[in-house]
Image (cartoon, rainbow, N blue to C red; front, side, top):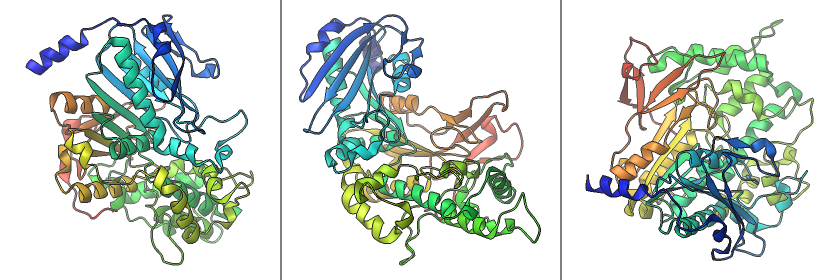
Length: 504
């Protein structure tokens, strides 16, 4: 109770101590404050990308900074500070893909919560009409993207909070998904003092593995035109998977609650003589098997990265367009960083080339170190979540990383780290299942009140085409089992049970 009263008194501070404009001269190592302006209109529209306009905002002080920790660094950081009603928290937010621009939606969301909030372009801005291949031969930019920019953002935000309000934030948090999830885990591993609580959604933390997996899926479905699976074939495949595995979690609801227990054989969809439509050719069946298996070294038969989960098939069209439309694989620039501007995906050899990528990039861009002892010992709390229908950053990697943390910490993970797997959720959002999970409030309660999260609730926002949907999400290794009766949207009709099967 005493803590709650003190915290309530702390967050009752509702006005800034320093005028916004005065933040322009804040001194931060190797950082230039470009502007500090108060926004009173309730709406913000960036000059460069007016489509990213956000509205419904409280009054805030917008600070734009550039951090240059090396001679080739150019890390843009924005910090938005509530002028009134600050809740005493600092929130840093993640980005996606190669980043390259500020995520104004993430800033707006945090600001509306009452947080002082920050975001970074991760030092990856490129000239108009260009892509991340401009960073070929520029390893300092890879390091900025991999880990340095997020730490710089944390330092800049903390300094501006102290200057603006006259004291530090009571608690600091990070929340991000995909690349943002990788940023989250990299912070817990390399800079455990930056944040009290961290939310890591669908982390692309094995960067080399993620991008090799994306290339593997592209190659499996694009080596020749016959490999490509159009939408009708994907729909037939998805329906066949549901028929085989949907009910295994106790409820037939169009969701695969445990994809690793789904032993579906795509060969059952092989077209017979004269058949077409809701079936697959021999080439397509082989492509499906490769996608489910994940990257396998053809020489050693070693798995390099987990396969895409059963239940994600409706999103496989995003592996790449119809081969009739010439294209590069997604995220081709990261391969060009290693193999040069003339890299040709047709020549990629999983064995030799994977090792080359690991040697050149892993130390700077992979966040796979399971040693979170320092983060745990200082009281840090981490919630990770992952969609079980994620076709881009597959959920098997979340289990691999959890095993690494368990091995390194040699203790009860529930003291500081919990993983939630969401049936039917795609990559960070989307998918046929519940696709929205609030993990920030639970991690705040864990840090500030000592209330450890148990079952969380994932929801799908209803649309004209879909009704409401929600499911309880148990902390892994427990899974939610339907009790056998009652409304599936009533979470009390599920129970968390310890799953017994070996996982990746």
